[in-house]
Image (cartoon, rainbow, N blue to C red):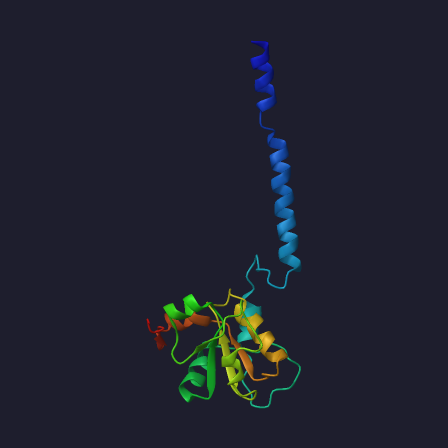
Length: 177
């Protein structure tokens, strides 16, 4: 009987240790989120997003290689003018499900500077890079990579597919083979 009581004492869960581990994990993840370039905003700041969206497209882009963003209205105007190439930065499965009509797919996660699609695009071509929406960062990362390669007329469409679909704008799906 005494052995059973002794066994029960050693099997008791130390909730204090679990709490310390959880607390440490939360603090570590918040710190990582704060220092990471891909960190998410815990409190959404609409002024920052609006200021990013309000940058106008200009033909003479300087070589500072800062990300420039466009709004839905600008994306529609550019789409209708056919003066730019839309680039979907999402993976091929998301692209196949639905994408902006006429867009090409250059997935950011498997980006290769020697991509054959990319080699066919002139460096002075206006590129509108998008992903799922403003919470998605793959379009920003792909745009940064394209700017480094000399595609200086690359812009991020922050609203992405979510906003495009909500506005009921033209989409297409990849053809099934």
